[in-house]
Image (cartoon, rainbow over all chains, first blue to last red; front, side, top):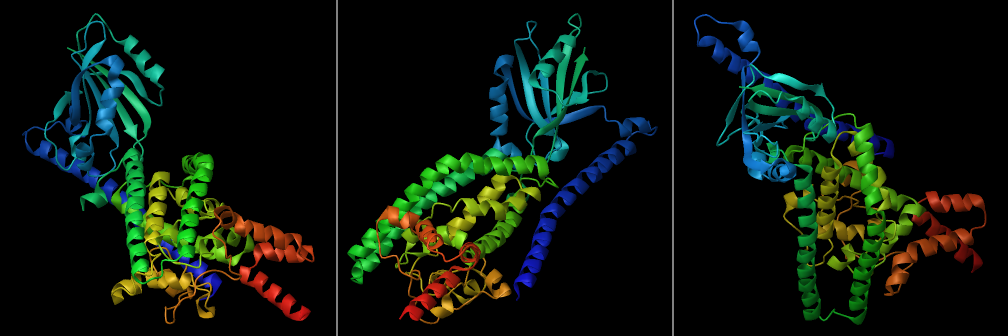
Length: 190
Length: 299
């Protein structure tokens, strides 16, 4: 084969294997909406009178992951534990789109909380425990955007301290490499 | 199937690379000891063999020193290009790793062929070829610029959306596979393996100075690239290893810098600038032929 034809053939081979690598992403993306539709259809079948808006916007999220009572100053240790949890990550169906950080039982001085870092159970092939988060009555502390650590911690100052807090929820949107692209923060009061 | 679809974190991939690199070296040393015993039994364990092997590991030491200096910059270029110029984002899965290994192997073929086709590349790669022996230690015989050329051939993978850590892992896998091919202990493997994969037999041909073996079998893992692109040769007659002209030294420093010393000398003594340009861009065989022609015309 001439040098020109060899180089041309190489480009075709590159395109083929790049396509194969891209194709798996397409499958992964295609699986998720289908699953959501199936979930919605299940919900629609149950009650005789259906509120369609309820089916479109879910009222709760079920997450699974690592849960621990921690000093909030040591939250990085829990992130390390989460990142090193190969058992959890091996059960992901595909590259996760979001990671959830749920703060509950927050102490009055904001020093401690029960923190759960995890994924939506719809993104898992299997899971042991899962935690349900009622998102029907929460309020937005930070709208979806890119924030640094200081901006995220400043958001906590917007919490109404007069009310009893049920949870604070951070939702990190992830790219294909698992890096955070945007974050939203919500608070829910009892 | 879990391996193909499960998601890896960049840290996990990095961990696999470090683990493979470290433990493979231990395995290679073990295999080299077996080779030494075999040569001893065959009464082929000579003083020159020992000196050459020590020189091989010494060039590895020198190469590691250079890598320690430029390694971060090398990785930084990949990360910068990936962060700023990638056209897609491929997930960190086993499937992506497999696709990347095939493409890194193809990139390796072209890089390797490039090193044999021009004087500047050959000046570093000639170090690897200059040993008159063929054993595992030769796989660790590196030239000073061996880290430089892979950059240009593997960087496009980062633009295509392969995470740099996956590219480095694929490069390491190709390199480790190649390492195992440097042996005379294994003659021929079963036919399907010889057909599809690069083997010790195919790689012995690559190190040969026999006329029919010159500039053949550039493959890393898959010999099919050579078969497709017309650079394949079968091992039919015993191989004589080394380069033209033979280096005849086991001095690690002389071995390590031999290629660029030779190139500098040729450039210095070149008759004109056109000849110098050809020395850098044309195949080393061209330079050798020019010298042979000059010698015969003087006679």
